[in-house]
Amino acid sequence: MMAIACELPWPMNEEIPQALIRPEPQAAEAMAVLKQDELAFALMAELANQAGAVSLARLSKRLQVRQSTLLRCIAYLGEQQLGQHQGAGWVSLQQDGERSLVVLTEEGRTVATQLTT
Image (cartoon, rainbow, N blue to C red; front, side, top):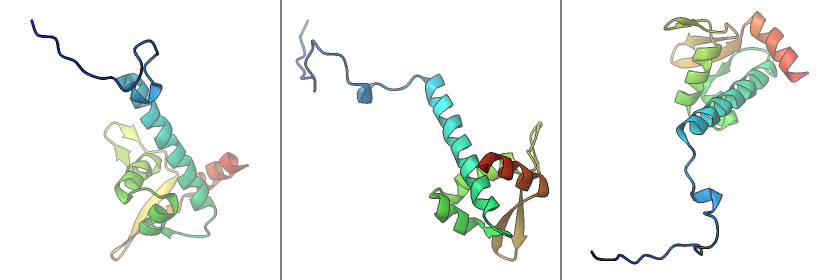
């Protein structure tokens, strides 16, 4: 049997640094949900500060997320049904020619006011 030598980036008598430990799948999923919740809150707050509809591209830049990520969030907060789940009905995604616009519904504006006060 051949021994393989390798050097560890930390001394053997110390614990493994937390940054090198991969999160368990459940923890990673919980972090993804938390991150999505933060985006939903930021989206609702941003839309509450606007008088009307805002372009998807502008929201994406302001919130510093990809448009595809923003669209997933809008899907859950929107009026459409996703599979067996009905959206919250708080935002509406509208098309204006080539532009996609996002606006709070009346119910969404009420919720956003409660969230930001």
